[in-house]
Image 1 (tube, one colour):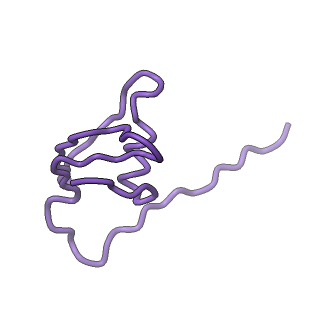
Image 2 (cartoon, rainbow, N blue to C red; image 1 turned 90 degrees about the horizontal axis):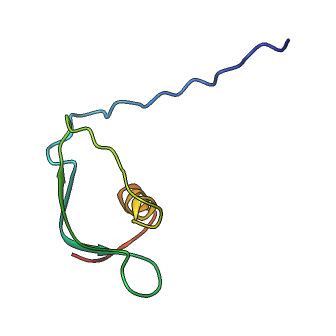
Length: 77
């Protein structure tokens, strides 16, 4: 039997406390080439908020995650 190896996963803390809000979206649209996948998003996330992304296939969960991560540009808003 082989020994199981688990890689450490560490999220560093910022040097200074972050000012609220961490994310603020007002009437944001985002997508790829063509019509936007997500339209008219309004959202505020603060440091102590916890979120979950739930939805059927094609609802825009990955698009939202890419936008928040900065891997997908906001088209409007």
